[in-house]
Length: 125
Image 1: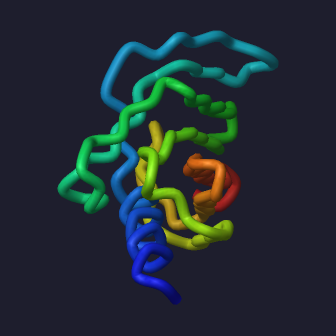
Image 2: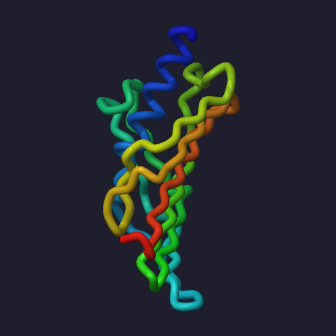
Image 3: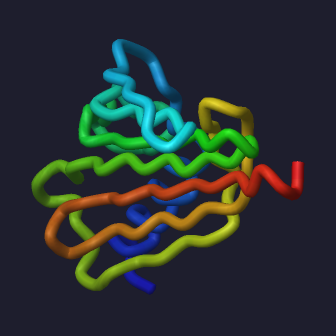
């Protein structure tokens, strides 16, 4: 694995562990679920090793009446730090509105995106 790929892989591991909701969600109810969009997800530079913090409002979460949650955040990787091929990370710690989970997947793409998706199955809580 190249040094560049290793750096992006490290960023993804940390991204899954460090996604923090920090402000202003837009919420709606649907079929008893709470849908929250456009909240800020934050990935600190010191955690990721990137030169700048990553912040996005390209985010979405659904909290179900049974206590399940799905959270997704889409980050832009700064120019020049994109991986040469897609990198997939599974099972890392992720913070959601209902608490932490390791039912997660992160994908970094050569197109310069990091998508993080985390899940809590309410029936298993």
